[in-house]
Amino acid sequence: MPIQYYIILAAALFCIGVTGVLIRRNAIIIFMCVELMLNSVNLLLVAFSKMHYAISSANNKGTAAITTGTDAQLFVFFIMVVAAAEVSVGLAIIVMMYRNVHSTDVNFLNRLKN
Image (cartoon, rainbow, N blue to C red; front, side):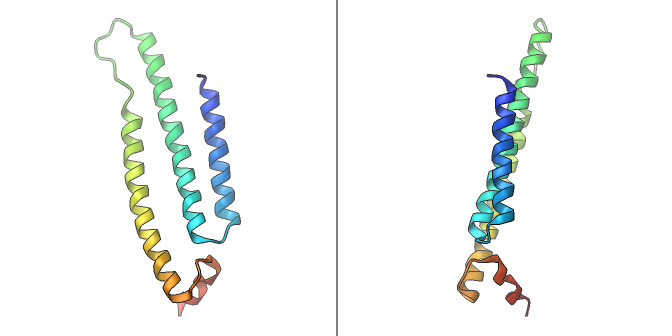
C-alpha cells in the first residue's frame, strides 16, 4: 500500500482532532480529540518506519546487519504510555471539576480560580 494513503488518513485524523479541540467545550470530548491526534502521529511513525525499512532492505540485500524497522514502534509504545498517563490524570481532573461545578464544560474552569 502506498505511503500516500497513510499520510492522507493521518492528516484527516489529525484535522478532525484539532477541529474537535478547538470547537468542542466538553472536556471528555477534548481529551478524546487529543488522543485522536496522538494516534494519527503514531500511524505516521509506523508507516514511515516501515517505508524506511523497505527502502533500506532493498538497498542492502547482502548485508547481515539490517534493522527490523522497530524503532518507530518503540516510540509509539512510549507515546501510548504517556497518553495513558495523560488520560488518567485528565479524567481525575474532570471528575474533580464535575464534583465542584456539576458540569464538564471547560468554560466553567474560570470558577475554579478562586
